[in-house]
Amino acid sequence: MKLVFSLIISIFAVAIFANSPVFAIQNGSETPPTYTEEQKAQKLEAQKKYEAEKKAKLEEQKRQKEDKSKQTREKSCSAIEQIGSKIRGEANKKDNNYSDKKKLNIEEQTKRSAERQKELIAKRTEWDAKREESFNKLRAKAKTDEQKQAVEQYISSVKDAIATRRSANDTAFAEFHAGLQSLLASYRTSHQSTSGQSKAKFEQALASAKAECLAGADINTVKKNLKAQTQSIRSTIKESKPEDKKSAINALVEKRKSAVEANNEVFKTSTKQAREKLLAVLKNARAEL
Image 1 (cartoon, rainbow, N blue to C red):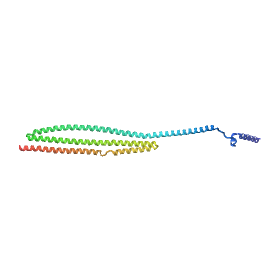
Image 2 (image 1 turned 135 degrees about the vertical axis):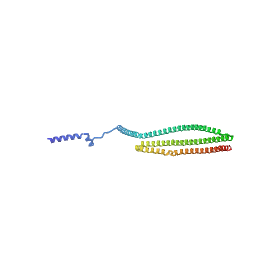
Image 3 (image 1 turned 90 degrees about the vertical axis):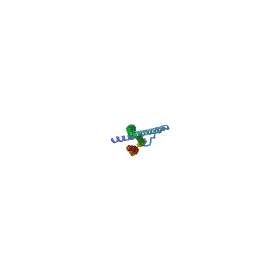
Image 4 (image 1 turned 180 degrees about the vertical axis):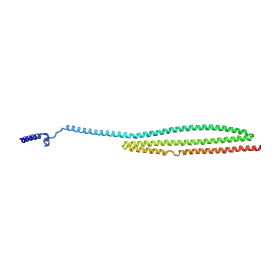
């Protein structure tokens, strides 16, 4: 009985399955759906639209990714500009200090020169007054016309010798100051030129570093290279400084010193000759007495 019932159930299941669409397709008895030309065109258009939207979405994602990467790179590269700003600030501070120091030195030199000139004039006036007292005492000792004439000749010769020495010494000091000012002006011009060139080289190195960084170079490597270039520029500045500045000033001092010593020798010779002539007249006067 059970066997008969199972057999009936199996036959019934096979009949139902045989009538299903799946079974029909598998056996090729059901035909595929057909589309009109309009439906085909609509389907193709929908496919194209889907692909275009997909492509646009992918491109937008790529652009956003590139923008984000660029922003990240620019943020990292901003450290290069920060380094540049710091170095510029240091350079400008040095230039301002140099300008202030130069201005102060010029003012002090002008002031000291005016004070020395004023002091020299006062001293010369004092010396002239004392010397005039000595001349008057010498005139008082002259008794004869010959002696008076000899004294006046002596006084005139001494005054001429003093005037000659003063003029020569003034020339020596004027030449010294002119040479010193020329030397300092040359030094300042050289300093300004070197400073300008070093700034231009640094800006060039900085621009190159920023370009390399934005192009994708390793930021640490870029910083390292920029630091090396900056140190090289600073070394060039130190090497370009005139090391013989002090010796050049000493040479001017020695030239002035030699000129003053030579002027003093000429003065001594002139006054000695004048004094010997005066003494000769005085001795003759004593001999006659």
